[in-house]
Length: 168
Image 1 (cartoon, rainbow, N blue to C red):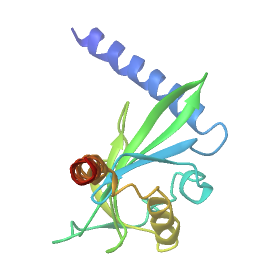
Image 2 (cartoon, rainbow, N blue to C red):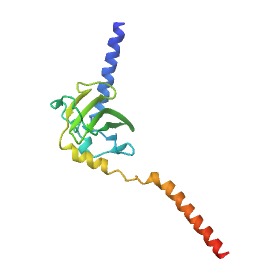
Image 3 (cartoon, one colour):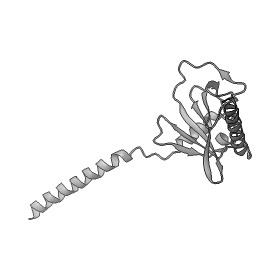
Image 4 (cartoon, rainbow, N blue to C red):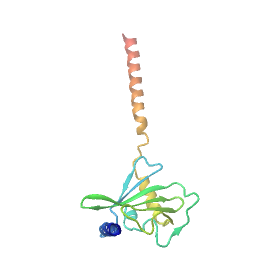
């Protein structure tokens, strides 16, 4: 039983080492996805300011902090790298740009010493992040487009009907 546990740990370590090595062979993530309040859908971002550095959001090794009482509006960030044409999620965090906090959920296929902790965010990342979430196309009118078209069709049909009555 003990040998199975040791074997499993070694296998997990090899898998994690291979994944981490592939992710950082180029020294950067390929892209990130962002989900959260005010976003109509998950957005994909390739901005180098957000993808080029593992510590882009926070310098985890020196910025640990206590859990904030109210971190404010946050966004889910998943960081990816591409390996042999496959998108592979590397890690997951929550970023709170308006209060300057990061909650590091952790590695997707393993664990690290930074997992499950709060950190102060790098101030320099806020502008790039806000710019990325504001660049999404504004399609807020789309839910109202269907009913609006139906109302226009009804209005045109009523007008035609009235004109036909007058001329006929």
